[in-house]
Length: 424
Image (cartoon, rainbow, N blue to C red; front, side, top):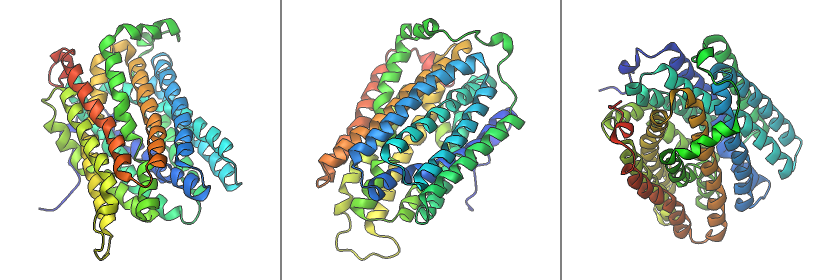
């Protein structure tokens, strides 16, 4: 039987705005993935910066982005989803252009850190607004598939971006940022032209209030969910930092080959996300997230065996190390396809209608914090265990094991009606 793209037959009734965001995700993800996997390689291999400092750069930028997530979620409830998405992508376009300029001029790490952080801040406003829009226009029973659809769009771009970036990085790193700027600017225009507002003026909150934001501390189950998610997102953060540098510097594969491995991740999501979303639709989301976290732990935990795979074997089209790393990526991606739409769906079910942006923003803050802490702690492990990668990657894999245990415990505290997709 011929292989073809998913038919999306169950999504034909989606609001047109969902499909517009789907195509926008393809473009924005392509622009993001053209540059981000190779930023760590550039800083470490080209500028000679230690992986601990590289992790610190990503930590600072993502902490700034995390703060932007919560502000962006608040503003999405006040100003509307559409306006925030337009502003976020336009601002990020300008930041990518600025990064291209400063890198071409040989800027030092301090300037690059500031510009990357500003780019993260601009982009962080987009996610809570777009996720809240999905919750606004999609009925609860179909949200898992809607968030899965956006992930497919993102991974179509993620498939193409690293392939393109791996080739172009051999020519010019600044040019990668120009492509990212063009992509994010295009998304801003698409939202401006084709996305109507999803929340009425009467349903919006009237002002930004830190006191109202503080009410989230009373939602203990949601806060517990956020805290448990931190080590999970620390796993997410390895892909564009330690995994890329380990593969190129320690294992010796090329930038183009790391692009091929990232393409495995993207293609798997394109072809497999919908079947997996449907297969977990009947499960409690906390159990699904525990299973996905465990797959993450296994996939990253066994990366440390790569130097010992295929020693002495001939290198045909691809080396044994490359093929083994691709297998590890396969396992990691299986975990990703279970975890990502499940988490967004659970956040949507836990949040009151008038506070969807706030809840998505808070979860975005937590995810960015974990995503940023991951490269930092992973960088510490990288520098400490460069000569002993088994310990390095076992330590990284322990983040996923910790998250899996946490989600199983949380499932006992969340009502089944909230924890299941097919109950409302």
